[in-house]
Image (cartoon, rainbow, N blue to C red; front, side, top):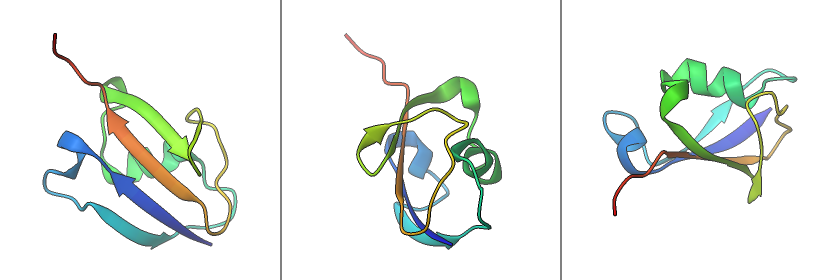
Length: 74
């Protein structure tokens, strides 16, 4: 299945901004995060097709996954 993965802020460093990637059926958000080497403790918002999801969410063909790091500031 094909999934569009969008990375934001510091997650883009040394990676990509947006990329269409192929994954086997049943792939979860957590598996994509692991494959990309993103530290789970730095994950902020995870969206699939503009809806909040958790790491165990199973992706479907043509989904768009957006991953944002925790943001700080004041």
